[in-house]
Length: 402
Ligand code: SIN
Image 1 (tube, rainbow, N blue to C red):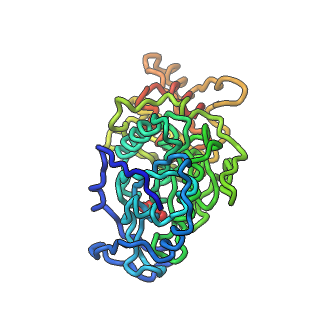
Image 2: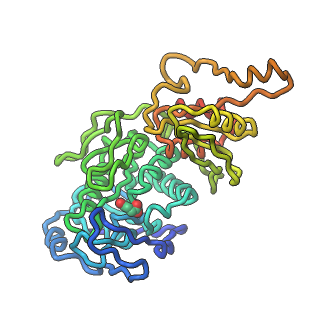
Image 3: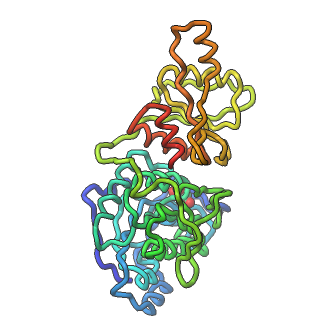
């Protein structure tokens, strides 16, 4: 494996290594105690050395920057080569890329260590820093694309945040693994190879941020972790963009909603995101109130109880933006977005009754409906939208377009 250049960003968050979490495998045999020191492989395995000798690096290959954040793809077991527990976010970006010498056939790799944590420790502030870093990197004329290695627990959320806020047409691919790097038959190396091949491919331009796992190319907007085994990432009814075949990435579809260069979200003056809470509705529910003073609330629901409706209407009345999203994320019939005309006027019947009975009462600001977005992703879009506006009509427009 030839490392052309290892870039160390001024804002590197390498110190977050301390936050690495111990995590059991899907079928754990050994779960080391959180206090146990994690062994870190220092020399490449014999098989990797042999593979490296067989690789002829392509000196003209596109340049791809691999930014590592942690996760199982960087996970190491106390008992390597077993099905046992492991410590996510242990191997470095250089170690991960060096374990796949075949990368040099398709790309000239640069690496950066952004953090090294289990993805449950990833915060919205880290999303902002990561998106800014990628936006700066992609301004380089010589860089074809970026790969972000990430834990799978929060992968779809980081990927969607980047989809909304990386304002470039160059490919950004987020990749993880469901088995640790030292486990039996790890999926990280082949996933990383597929991710780099995708990020290096001219075919991947203008496809937005993608998740590449298990040879599938998924739009970050639709990708979801369905289960904790290989093949566990899917896009529900909306299909995948393409596959990484033996001859390379093949695209069949392209996303048409707003993202990338057409995104209106500029993080230049943003360091923290507005607080948005997430809650669920359920039979007999009365709705939730919050002591955290959120600017927005997302409610996962297929239909609210009368008491929930009253609670969230009262919240809207105080200026909090309330977004409803289908629990499955498969709502294609709300908000009046897209289609062949403007959204139908929404009449809040409670407001109308109020205005008849007590004309001085201010109308209740409308609720916002998420179209085909899971509640966790609706929360991210609302956080980003609230950096621009807190007008629910404008936020509905944003939900209709992204
Ligand atoms: C994590 O999300 O960091 C651990 C789980 C994984 O990467 O699969």
